[in-house]
Length: 205
Image (cartoon, rainbow, N blue to C red; front, side, top):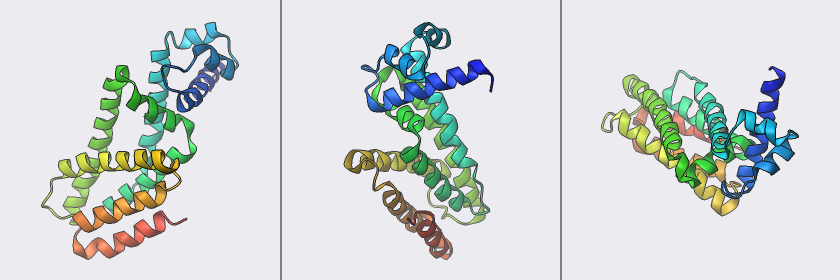
């Protein structure tokens, strides 16, 4: 990473901390520059506005969360189960991911970027469900498009409610329960016990 890129990354990380702690409207550019250890002029060269800085945090959050879907497994549903554990871990440990999700959901100006992020997520999940349908792992009575458009908001709601109720302390068991419902609801009976074992092992501990 070039020195200027390193400085940019410091600014994005400092902004993520501020946005995760404070609302977008109250986070201070001066405070972000201070936390990043750079002059405000340097920050503004990279990010002319707070809006541009928020978009950078969301873009970095997107990149980190989409990486979780790269963990391919011969079983399409196992791929999704393990990807959801990867995203859950990021939500609990990665301030950039937490901040990106928080500001994308709380600030109307960022609605277009938020919609784009979820469209990408749904499209990726739909692709995996298509594989699951083709392999016979999932029953054919619900289209892949509907399954993807259901699972992504289901997971989003689970993690948001977990954050409100417990600060995400119960996130792993909550996502495990989500998967138990999904497996029993959409997987072919011959695959259900295997998939439930994967859910238990993936979210144990």
